[in-house]
Amino acid sequence: MSSVIEVRINAEINRAYYTYERYQTNATFALVYHEKELGLEELGAYIRKSDRFVKMDENHFFMLFHFTDVQEASKASQNLLLKLDNHFHNTTTCIAIDAFNTANPTKVVLNRLKQIINETKKNSFSRIEYEDILDSYI
Image (cartoon, rainbow, N blue to C red):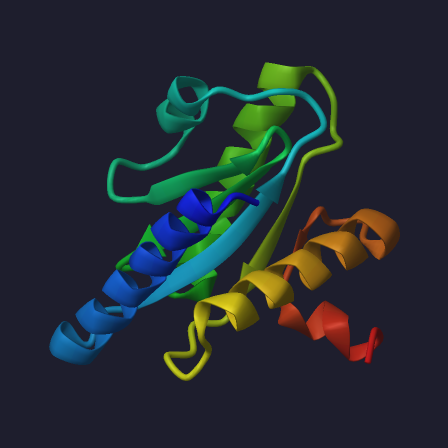
């Protein structure tokens, strides 16, 4: 991941933390994995206007679900997964969701999401997983 992308993700995470501290609004972080190339405009058409995303590489997007707790992010992820399944005509896309914790710096957030996505690709049937999948990893 380039330093420009890391700076952008850091800014998104810090903005979410600030918004939470100032207005007590929820947010949820996610990482979307897909096998085939997906453009910014294509993904943008499949998510809510309030959600933010950063393309990390040709197979991964960092997602920020603003004003959304984990349960609402789960529903948004299910909808996104269905749209991406139809877009790609396969079921290889998966999504990692991590709990919002303002104590976690950007590197911790990204490392946790990457660990969740790797475990999801190896061991999950649901294709949407949370940090509890790491319990078996540790």
